[in-house]
Image 1 (spheres, rainbow, N blue to C red):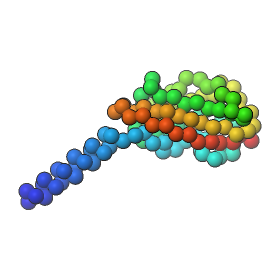
Image 2 (image 1 turned 180 degrees about the vertical axis):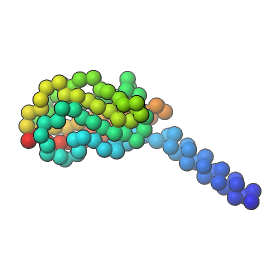
Image 3 (image 1 turned 60 degrees about the vertical axis):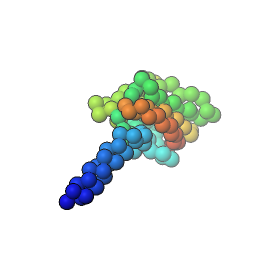
Image 4 (image 1 turned 90 degrees about the vertical axis):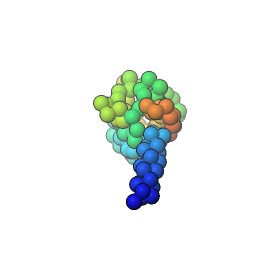
Length: 118
């Protein structure tokens, strides 16, 4: 019985430590990676961990690599869903989104994806 309790406690400790040390992972985004869509008004990115907005960023490059103007990045009450509005309508072409997120436990991670506007 004692060995079982010790084993269960060890497993629980490792499970909690693994969650606390996790990096933010992009779960889903809108637009989706590789999508061809009508011009969106904003990006919505859902992450696996709570984020620190002051230490996080999202940059968008449009056709020809030109920077796309965006409004301030918003964060929902769960601190996991980021919204980035576009300040002007997007022209047709290929777009690349690059993000850098810092989680509340101090870990930082980067990623990118692309979409097309028809």
